[in-house]
Length: 181
Length: 219
Image (cartoon, rainbow over all chains, first blue to last red):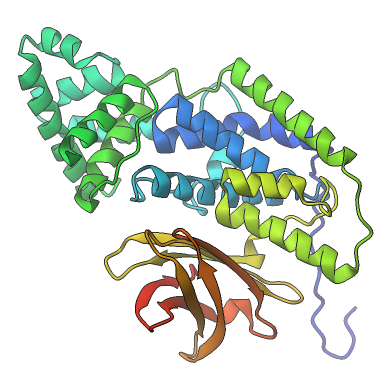
């Protein structure tokens, strides 16, 4: 019952909390790594940035906060860690973390199937390229071929493979912008 | 030169190696992003290794033990509040190794002592030059009192920087001045009764009044 026409201000109590910092770590380490890997595209950097997020976020963390609040806090920390990484590495924000959409990386059940949409995004981009452009990018980025191996597979010279890759990436970048990926 | 460095960077990404730093041009960003996204689609590396997860767990455990061994000083309430606000700001603002170290070694916070900043309590913005170059970040924290933190990297600059805050009615709140040394500066200050929810942005100018960068707070 509310007296005097006042509006009750109730706070939803979320009892879904972590019991200790180890449980915070165990529940989120895979998720955060996947997110960082999707944003930097290589294991060494993804590992360093994931480490940086936990080293920064864990000490001042209050465990009475709900899991959702802890994950939101980890995501904010990850966003600034990634922004600092690109500023140091290239001076340009190549990729970023969106607090509204990327929370799914941390909130969806952790399992063998990552929530990453990277394969679908790559599929859309590659599907829009001419055959030779698509093939050189598949060989290099999906099949991890060296430029020499890719050239051999396509029966072209190494220098031609370099030019082909460069043009293919430019077209892929334009396509990603057009598709708003 | 830049083209060679761009090619080397892309080659490292394709091979799954750590790429070397270089000063990229703005027009290279889309190509670099495409390379990262294509590589991220490759199955395998998207999962962390057990060696990494267990190794990091051991390092964090050791850091936590060291922190617990550190004597906690009896601090006045304002001092304790300042310490945890700085730690929280470091967490959301800098995110670097130095910040991590500072947060881990700050005497007041422990793993259970400090409130997690909630999404609605934080507002962030990125300092951009007129040419679109990212110079740093600003974080506003709604509390009692509310605070603003910022960190900027201004290449080859040594000197004072004046920061002003704008609120959503267009008025400017004189804020403060801090020093940038060897291109890097950090600043934190209470904003008194200013409602964080009404902040629109921040501007940075040099001591001579030259514009350095501006930031707009995300909604």
